[in-house]
Length: 116
Image 1 (tube, rainbow, N blue to C red):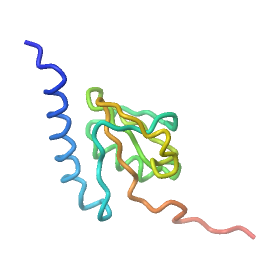
Image 2 (image 1 turned 180 degrees about the vertical axis):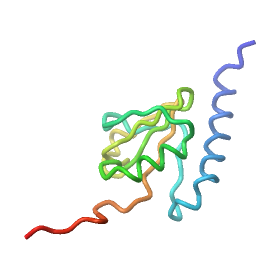
Image 3 (image 1 turned 30 degrees about the vertical axis):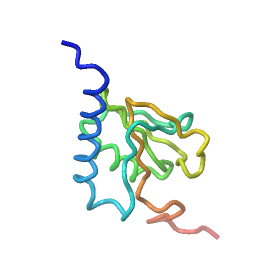
Image 4 (image 1 turned 60 degrees about the horizontal axis):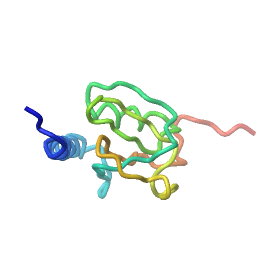
């Protein structure tokens, strides 16, 4: 029985909602995933993850990561060194992924000292 693309769209949408609810405590107001979209051409790191929450956590820990694409059917995290706001021309449709912007503030460094 071939369930086809409509099943995957519905399943992915449900997974996105569950993911957003699971990580809502870690997200600033207004941060959310965008199903069916990805940032193309800015992936600096790909990792296999057990859950989308691990992808968010990994992105927030890497200073280079500004956003990520989550590949739904492969459980792969694609960390981006840019965001859709910085490169709107590279924000494209892809129904196998969803896009999520990092919730850390860019330019904010912790545990670093300025050298004179």
